[in-house]
Length: 260
Image (cartoon, rainbow, N blue to C red; front, side, top):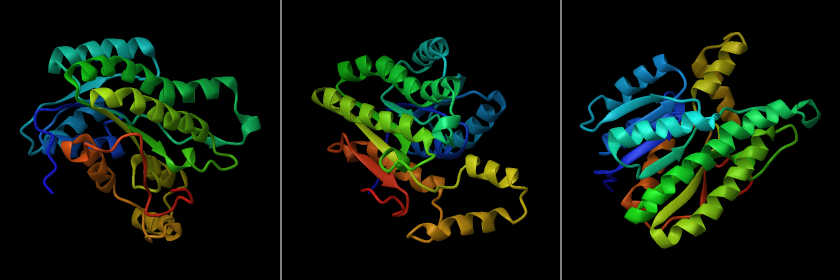
């Protein structure tokens, strides 16, 4: 199956590294123009170079801290001025954060909700009118399997991601009459910059490949996933090939989640 995004424009938050960069690269190679949003200007410059390599489409970077409503509004205007429209919105920004409930302050809760929930709410609010007017749109929310199967000590991420799951279902029903499809992808153990940072924090006492091998031992498929594998399903959902899929939450986890 040749999955194409020709003529579409995608906006991806958290797009400078890991899953976001893999999606930006896949979308661009599949024919889409891509707006990459992230905080780090240096990482953004490198991401544009990676995502646009071999692509014939436009890939642009926009420095934006999506925790702040004002920055989202200003960046949205820049993206509209550059591309004229957004057909595909991928709410991907977020880091894994987990602690015992009693240890979490209001400030920690608010920061997590601003990054993982309110950023998606604000961007969806901006993107939906144009998608509805054109009667074509795709929204993909990157969540994690903890949203379906929260564990003790999994807050605040499990809670903010569960709210993102509910948001996905609500918007899928409201977008359906306008051919705006809204889905979630549930991240399992997939190679990313976050896991590499964990490896470094632990002292890097074993090679990174060995670190990922050990991590993958508890996955039914026997390995950690690749970012490109996640990007493949995102590209399918963003394309016309996924035209009858909305309101779903797909586990991309090698079978690890106990919940379907």
